[in-house]
Length: 402
Image (cartoon, rainbow, N blue to C red; front, top):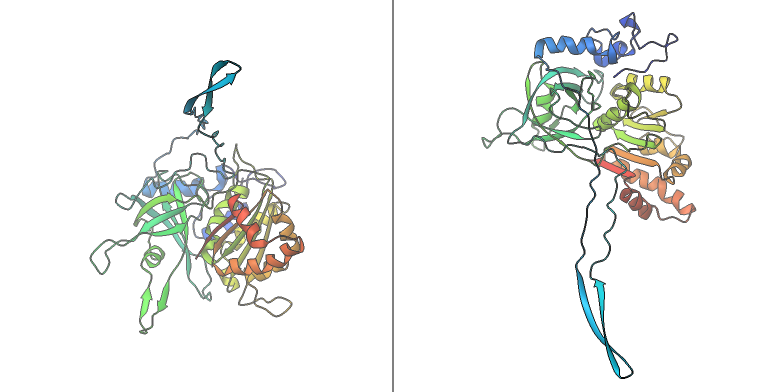
C-alpha cells in the first residue's frame, strides 16, 4: 500500500529523503525516526518495531465473495370442487399456493462483505502488545488524550468503523477481573504501519471528582493512557456494523464528531486519502465537522490539513472550537452551530440518495442538528423526524453517541 504523491517528480512521499515525508512532520510520529522511501511510508518504522516485538508476517488474504442462492419450496394444498354443468358433475382439482412469494433479501449499502464480529471474547481474549503511546493534546488542553498503537499480528481482522474491547489488568473491588470497555478503532484496516498487524485507539484519560470530593480515575482509560511500549493488552472483538463505510466510492459522506468521537472518521479518511487500494478509490465528497473545546484539543489536525491540501475537491473540514470561537450571534461554536452556517447546502445533500451521515461523540449534537433541519425540511413540506427515520432505514443516518 502506497501513499499517493502529488510531488512534481511523481514519486512517493519521501523518496530520496525522509525529510520530504509529510508523516515525519506529524506530531503523532515526530519521535519515531523512519524513512518513507519504501512502500506506504512506514516500512522502516514497522521493521524497527518488529525487531523488538517479533511481529510475524501475515499472508496475503484474498476474499472470495460468493452469493448464495436459496432454493425455497412452497407447500401447496390440493382443493377439490364439484361443478355442475347440466346433468353432469365435473370434478375440478385446483392447486393453490398457501405461501406468499419470498421477499428479496436486503442488500446492504455498506462495506459489510466478510466482516468479522466477536472473533475474540472476554473469556478468551487476544493478547496484544503496546507498540506506541503518545499524548496528542496540548499541555494547556482541558483533557488529556492519547493515541495508542497495539500489535495484533493480523489476528483481529477489523474494518473501518468497527470497535474493539479492552480488558484492563487487575481485579475490581469484588476480586473479579475488570469488565471490558469498548473503544472505536482509530486506524484503517491496514493500521498505522500499513501492514494489517496493528490497531490504534484514541483514548481520553477519565479523571473526575465525585460528590464526596474524592478523585476518581476511570479504570480502562487510565490503564490505556499509562501503557508503556511492550506492555500486554487483552483485546476482544472486533464488534459493530453500524458505522461501516458505504460501498459507493462516489458517495457524499458527512462526518460529525466531537472529541475522541473522531476515531472512526480517522479510519475512514486514512482509507480514502492516505492509502491506495486495488478495489477502492474514493471519488466522492468527504465532509468532516469536528468539535472540540480548545484548539489545543484538535486531534490529528495536521493529518486532516494534509488530506485537504492533497484532495481539495474531495475533502472538506470544518472545525468548531467552542471555547474560542463564536458565530455571528455571539453563540459558542459547537458542531451544530458550525453546520448551521451551511444549512441549505447540507439539506440539499441530505435529499440525495448517495449521501451518508455518520455521527460519533456527544449526543447533544443530534438534538442540535434536528433543530437546524426541522425548519429546512418544512419549507419542502417534509417532516424532518420522519425523513430522518427513512434515512436511518436506508443506512444513510448512522449514529454512535454517548
